[in-house]
Image 1 (cartoon, rainbow, N blue to C red):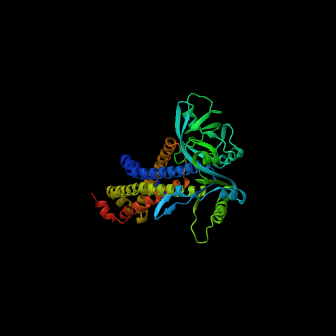
Image 2: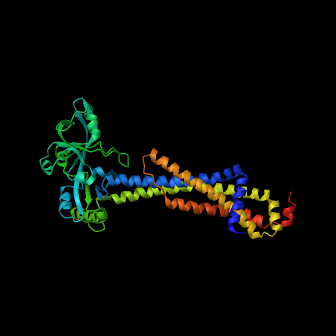
Image 3: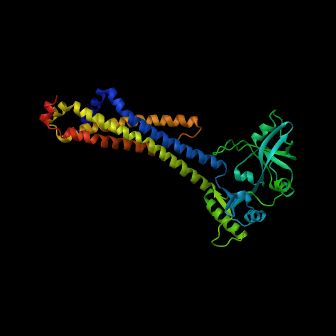
Length: 406
């Protein structure tokens, strides 16, 4: 019997009991839809995080003091004073793969303008910080290196700060706002960046010359962090190696001793987040695939029932010359078609679910061709695996016993 006739007979048999066929396919539909949706949503979340991190600067490098231990007690990074002006000058003057460097010192202050106030962290940075973090000036100007040298009391503010301190639409440029008891003149307003991939409001920021924050607010000479940008994303690791060598030399760290600083590149952050989201996606897809096993068991159960119901038909076909192989292929074909139809419906449903989820969660819509291809393979294998034993049972029937079956 040729394959065309087998497919026609199989489809005819399946549509003879439409409700039973639909219920049998349900497990496969749910399983495939769940796997497709989970994989698509997982890939979309990874892509979304990568996109968000790229807005922070795809070649950005963060240099932080290492965590301090005193008497066996973890003092955290805030207790370290390992990064200072000598490190900043060395990185500016002696690096090949570093395009820009900016220190950062932070002070939490209450911002006050007239009757309005807002709690915000004031970040002391250099003029190159905006380029490193991909911030843009919407109106006004960024402070200059001359402002840094003179400890000038000037600042640029984000859109959230504008809304909180100037809710009536007053122009902030040129206005004096107080940080605690110290007045600062607003000379620039940043363009909106929205929330980061971590949920932080990137517009709730105030930037001032780092020397101003050091001398007028905190009375310190060291930095909380250093931000740098590599000459290109591909050279980020080379830049990190270069920074490590310079800082170890500056701090007198000998071979075999631990660094008193930590360096993080965007590539490391992306890799870490991608591995976490990938693991979660795999876990969710594995849980969803359990319903495929349930669907496969349902197919096996129905095929057993079908073989029993059609015992006389099997005996009659054998009596008129059908071989055991023909009987087996007929029932195996029914099982595979049942599984593939359920898989196609499941793929379509999974893509719809992924699309709706991407719109609701404001993520990109990602279609995983590999997941779709794998779903077809899994559906075919499920049909063969769970349909083989009932088909074999039908093929091994004794024709005379089958004809006498009531």
